[in-house]
Image (cartoon, rainbow, N blue to C red; front, side, top):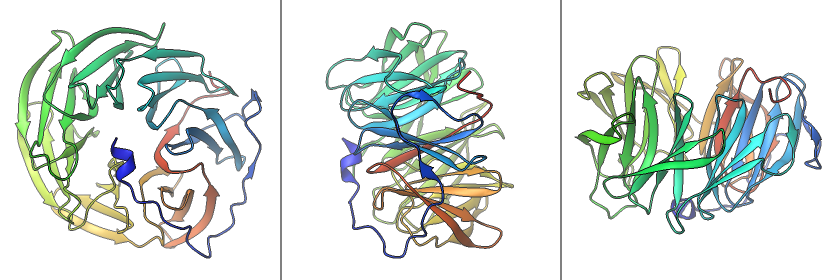
Length: 333
């Protein structure tokens, strides 16, 4: 289970006190407006923070074991991947409380990452050497597709899925499988550096593949989504967080770099680094601010890049590993 490779540490001294008050998970309607979901893998919880009202719903959802990824579905629900319980859970964003529906996956398959395409959900089965297709309308598993070992990250670009393969320091595998979900087959493979743990399509028509063996050898391989050709390979100079996902940042992309803080890169290389005072597990942008999760500190830092300073620190569940911006949802619908 990859989340266990993250080293827990004592909380950093001097954290800024968060001004958003926890309002509890005891059921009932959530605040309206956009939210940022904190997925915490050690406490099995999802917190919801509403920037407009500065409201934090702590443990809005108590999930299955080891939630590792989540996304907003086409129907306005939050789908959460629970790795150690081998299932995907669906939550109604209009209120806190239990899951509305669950899709069960094979025991021991270790579902890890999730993507959406044409209304369907696609989940990598890290230890199952396959991906699963799930219909969120009934949370039914429609079919499985065998892949190369250790399918880890998954992203959708155009009409295809991009699945990265890699697991751990000692596995030599490093590749991306290109999947046609209509034909339901792997149509191409692209070799990368060892341990390709994330495949993230971005809006310029490329797919960014993150690799590292956690020896300060992090790299980004940028693929042209229309052809699968390698556009660039960038040396990051540090090991990115295993939950890092590139986020749009002006003409480049923002990346959480664990102990190295935050990093900005473009197709020519690294353009900026930010020491935010905490190890960064994942980072998202919302309304001009950066929200950076810290697995080690059980917190989400709010960073103002214009002033290069922290403006708030929000408490999170234990081991926040993924942040998801939930936009355009009013009372969950």
